[in-house]
Length: 236
Length: 293
Image (tube, rainbow over all chains, first blue to last red; front, side, top):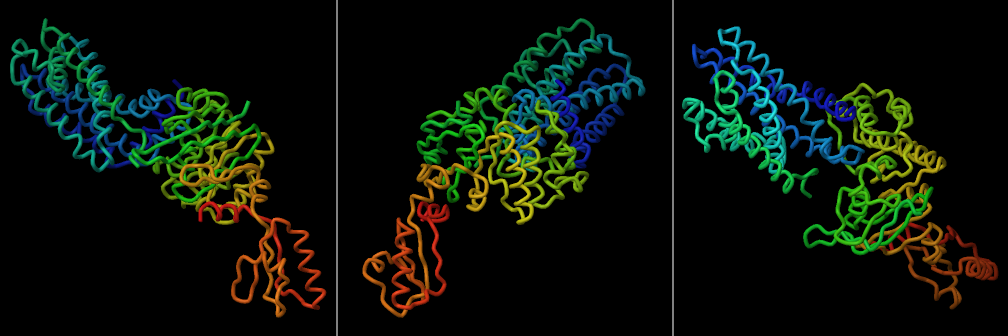
């Protein structure tokens, strides 16, 4: 655990020294989250916070992790790490942990901002915990899968687009209908599952499991692609 | 038990067979140098030993373990120096060395590692600002941290200036004196001669020549060279002639001492002075050129 923490600390240091990554991981989701919150109104705060969560996980975890993993592979940092004593899961945990923690901090900041702007406290705050946990793991898993097809940090701008757009569109799709009108198909979309789970924090009585199942399915898909296609060093 | 055991190792990239059935062992405390031209299979062999590559067939064992399947067991006892890179440029030299020390279980003093490679004055500099030679020395510093039992070094002094190269050789020699086993690849034959007691020269993925430095050198004839004399050589010496440059004769012989004595006796008998006379036994360079030519 100490070794994973050492790697995570080092990765945090690297992130803070890279202005572009800093902007993507920190400023962009906060800025967009604030913009979304500015549109909040009575009765729609569940949707507002849900969209903020989706933005945070897409920018801070998914896009940034894809970019940094591709960059580390290109720099042969991944290969060097594999020359040491850490196992593969420990290496990945160390590299991804700072982004997952940063996402939690951003979500809390945005939530606090929303409350300050008039959002009511969630009726079921515990619904936000699985939303964060399963959502982060899904975003990380999809990032690793996308990194498998991303040769460089620059190319990540392009390769993240399909999942990014699909997640945003599906989140918007789910949030455009009432909570009780969400279908199983909506739950099986990456953004839809996450958005609905967050929105359940402000709804009463809706089922959480279908959304969690959707997030698990996407995590499994990402992990399966990662197992089959992920490379620890650039192609020769 | 040998520290490294390689048995009938084959590695391929698609249709290209990079390593084609090689066998060798490295005993405790030995320094084994893998030599060969670019593309001969040196780095592929080393990366297989490091566990980065899976063999197509055959086996590699480090301390009796599979370096790929039992990575953690092997790595605790092994220092690895990659051929190229592997650093996050944003971190300083000290942060990089500290991180590497924390990621492993071998105990050691990072400051001392940097001092050994003359990097202490660059400790607070970002790695991306180091010269190529300084990055190589940092690679060595990370590999030797905690004095591992086995060191795998891929071209450890490529890009170093002569002083840094000798310093690195001294560090490696100190580790050997302390009992470390070393396998290295290099393009510098003088590096192999300075450090290694076993060498293998690869060609097209196969070991063409292997043995101690003495054994490898002894497989080749000795050479005697001198300025072309005004008097023709006697037939028994003329038969040894293999080459002549402008104004110079080169003789090759498997029996250096008697043939040199015969040449000197002949020169004495004709009152000749053999200008620019020099004689030497077969060398690693000769063996290398014989293999790669």
